[in-house]
Amino acid sequence: MTWRPADLDALDLEYSLVLAAGDSGDEVELGFVIVEGAVFIRAYSGPSSTWFQAARAAGRGTVEFGDQTLEITFTDASAEASVIDAAYFEKYGPAASLATSADARAATLQLDAAR
Image (cartoon, rainbow, N blue to C red; front, side, top):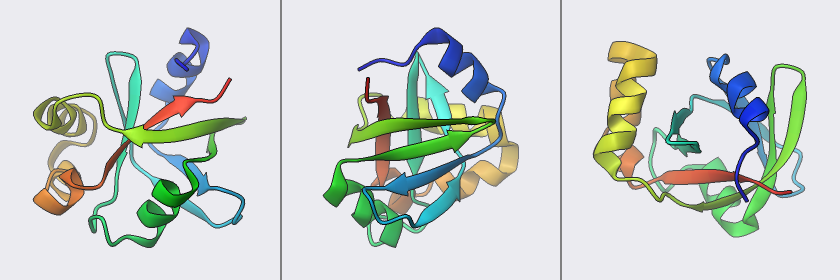
């Protein structure tokens, strides 16, 4: 499913989001980017990241940002890695180097609204 424009507008105002994979209740705060109406996250430490593995296994979860909590699904990234890299640098400046390493690129997920 696609994101509603109002949700993307609200999300775009946020620096980070809080993600929970499946029903575990475990949460992690992550940076994210929006590229052409799609929301992407990366595990800085790569595919071995605990939250990344949980997200891939569950295939669904929730995100919290602002005063909203939305159900989402996780899919493989649909955008080119270089486009996502550029979005991270535009949003986070030099700190984006954490999200643009080879390991982080290998652990990129797209978040889709689960409506």
